[in-house]
Structures are given as C-alpha cells and as structure tokens.
Image 1 (spheres, helix red, strand yellow):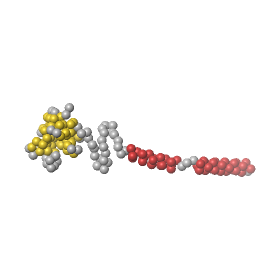
Image 2 (cartoon, one colour; image 1 turned 90 degrees about the vertical axis):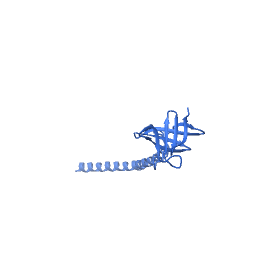
Image 3 (cartoon, one colour; image 1 turned 180 degrees about the horizontal axis):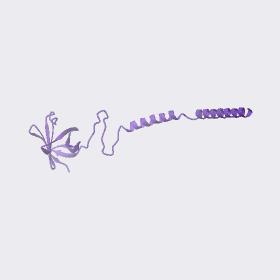
Image 4 (spheres, helix red, strand yellow; image 1 turned 60 degrees about the vertical axis):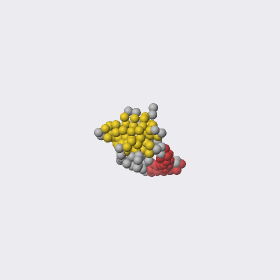
Amino acid sequence: MKKILLASLIATLTLTACEKQSQQTAAEQPQPAQTAVAAETHDAMEDSADHQDHDHDEHDHEHDHAGHMHSHDEGDAYQCGSKTIHIAVHDYEGETEAHLTDDSIVYDLNQDPDNPARFTTDNGIENNQPMALTIDGNNARVTSNNRVLLDCTKQS
C-alpha cells in the first residue's frame, strides 16, 4: 500500500511541478497572437501607403481607385500650325481606338469600321460636336461638320 501511495504522491508532485513551470513560462513570454496582430496591422498600413502610386509589370498607369481611371501614353506629337496635339492609336479589348490630346483634354475616338484610317467621336473639340480624325502616314486631319479644324504633320 505504501508503494501505491508513494507512486501517487510522486505523480501528483510531478504534475504540480510541470503545471507551475508552464504557468511561469507563459507569463514570461510575450503573447505571440497580440504581437502578430500588431505586426500585421503595421505592415498593412505600410502596404496601403505604398499602394497609392505603383507600376505594374505590363504597363504604367495612374490610379483613381473609385473609378479605376487609366492614364495612357500621350502618343505621337503632331504640329498643327502653331498648335501641337498628341495622337495615340492602340488596341483596346480587340478594337482599335485613338486618343487625341489637345490642350490637356483627351478625346476618345473609335475606329470607323469602313475606313481603318478614320476615327470618330460624338464629343469633339468644337462645342462637343461630332468630330473625325483621319490619319494618313505622317499627316492627320481633324474635321467637324465637314470643316477642317486641324491639319497636322507628325513631328519627327
């Protein structure tokens, strides 16, 4: 009986000693969950600040995350008398379109299905009237209501 009692006493003391040691160790160590959350919050704040201006591998563009506006390359410079405009022609979702920049205003023009050198818009330079852009080699002509608004030559 003494052997059973002695074995029980040793087992109890061992368990008590182990339990006290684990409580002391837990109290001495910082709480990893709180540290991880604080680090994640700090990293998230740094990442959100870095996200304001960034470049993608495929292309550079500016962001307006509410509308996700993209700012494209101004394109080639064309001299139209004393005025300079920029024209960029590119493929967008399988359709060719042109962007004409005049006095920091960008006009989006769609390619005419009957004439690939002609681009049109309903919101043109002159009082938002329909406008056409025709590109022929190094020359570009902007017309509205059968009138030539700009006759331009590509700058080299």
